[in-house]
Amino acid sequence: MARLAAIDIGSNAIRLRIVDVDPPALGAFGGGREPALAGGPAGAHDAPRFHPFRDVHADRASVRLGHDVFTKGRLESGVIGAACEALRRFRTAMDAAKVDRYRAVATSAAREAQNGDLFVERAAREAGVHVEVIEGIEEARLVQLAVLERVALGDRTALLVDIGGGSTELTLLRGRRAVFSRSLPLGTVRMVETFLEDRRPVDAGHRRLVEEYVDRVMVDATREIVELLGEGSGAGIDLLVGTGGNIETLADLCPQPGAPVEGRAIDVAAMSRLLDELVSKTPEERAQIYGLRPDRADTIVPAATILGRVAQSFVQPFIVAPGVGLKEGVLVDLAHAHFLGPDFRGEAAAVSDACTRLGRRYHFDEQHGALVARFAERLFDDLAPRHRLGQRDRILLRAAALLHDIGDFVRYEGHHKHSYYIIAHSDLMGLTPEERAIVANIARYHRKSPPSMDHDNFRALSRDARAKVKAMASILRIADALDREHRAKVADVSGRIEEDTLVLEVQGAEDRALEEWTVVAKAGMLRDALGLDVRMVDATPRSHPPTSGG
Image 1 (cartoon, rainbow, N blue to C red):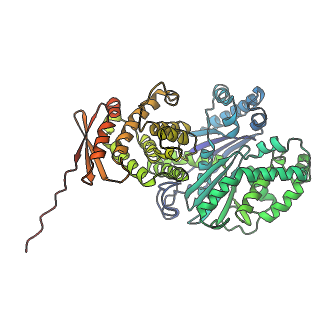
Image 2: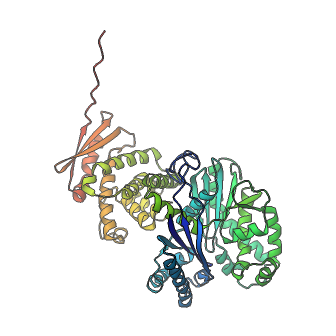
Image 3: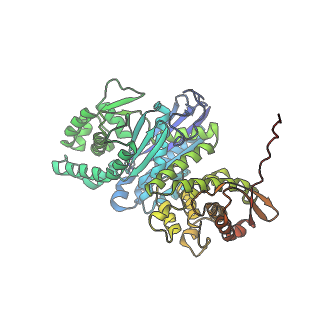
C-alpha cells in the first residue's frame, strides 16, 4: 500500500486529495502493462487497474488565481499569500498523514502569470511545497490517465473535454490511444473575467458573444478532429467524456438516466434548457436556487456553454461525467511510478505518437524520419559506453530524429532553424518544457553549424542539457547522413568502437558513395562530442549452415 497526495493549483481554486492505494490489479482487463497510454494499437493492451482509492483527507481553498492573471497579467501579493496559506495547511495535512509521495501541479493561471516564478518560490519557502507549473498538454495527459482508470473504453472512440478555469483540453482517444490532444485558452474564469465580470444576468448580446468566442477558439481543433475521424462532423465518436468541477455540478443538475458506462452522464438537451435559466439570473440567484458555491455560480455559465458547443459540434446527446479530474490523474501517475517504476517503452511510444501527429500537420517525410530515428536509436545504444546517457535521453533523441526535417514545411533553406522553432513552440504530449527544448536543439543542430554559446537557443539551456544536445546531435548527424538521399539505400546499421573510431557496419544497396561521403563530412561533431572518428564498412555477411547434398 502507498499513501499518495495530489495538489491541484487551478485558476479557480486549490485542491488537495490524500489517498491510500493498493498495488494495481494487473490484467484486470485481460492484459499486461499498457505499453503506452498514447501509443500502440488501440485496444492491443490494457493498463493495470488500481483498486479504488481510499480517501484519507481532502481539502479545498477558494483562491481564484485567475482573477488577477486574466485581468492584470500577474498575481497580486495578497493572492499569492492566500495561496501559500492554503498550501501550508495542505503541507501540515500531508505531514500528519505521513504521505509517501506527493505532487503539486499549477495550471494556466500560474503558467501565464508574469510573476509565476515568484509564486513557486514563495510556495517552497513559506509552505514547504514544491510546485510544478505544467503545460496544458500535460494537463491533458494526466486527465487522460484518470479517465482511463475509471472508464473501460475498450476499442471505442472517445473525445475527452476537460474544462478548467483558464483552459480547456481536448483529447481524442481511439481505445486507449490518444490520436489528438490540444490545450485551448478557453477557461471558465478567463471567460467570466473577459465577458461576464459585472455579475448581472447575461443578456442576449453577451450570450451570443460568449458563444461566438467559444466557436472561434475551437474551430481549428474541431476541424482537425473531424479530419482525423475521416468523415463528417460527429461521425466516429462513440463517447463524449467531460471532466472538471463544473462538469460534476452539471451532472447533478442535468442527469442522463441509464448512463452506458461507469459514472454519471449529462443530458445535453436538459443542459441547454438549464443554461437558458442560468443566464437569466445573477450569480447570487444561481447560488441560492441551485445550491451552488459562490465560485461555481459564475463559472457554470461559460462551462455549460463550452460543453454545449462541443456536444453540438459532434452531435452527442449526452456527456459522460466519470467524476475524475486533474488531481486523480496525478494520483494515478504517482501510483504507476510508486508500484511499477519508469515505463520507458510506454513513454517512448507516447512521445513517438505525439511527434508523428505533429509531423503530419507539417507534411513531413515520415518514412525518412522513421528510418533516421531507427538508425539514431541503434547508434545511441552502440555508443552507450561513451555518452553514458539514460533511457529517457534515448526517447528525446528519437523525437528529434523523427522531426529533424519538419522545418522543410517553411523552407528548405535554413530548415534546421525552422525545425527548432516548430518543435520549441508545439505541444508534444509526454515531454516537459525542458525536454522539448532539448529535442528542438538536437533537431536544430542536425546540420550546418555546431552548438555554440553565441546561439541564444543553446545558451538558454542548462549545462547538463547542453552536454546532452552536443552528444545526441552528433549522433543524429550520422544517422541522417546514412539516408542522405531519402531513398533508404542503407537498410540497417550497427556500430562498434575500435579504439578512437566508430566503425559503422551497414547493410543495403551497393551504391552508397554519397552516404559514405556525407557520414565522413558530418563526423566532426561526433569527434568533438565523444572523441570518435567514423569509418563505414560493409556488414559482415552472415554465415549459413551448409545444405545437405543428395
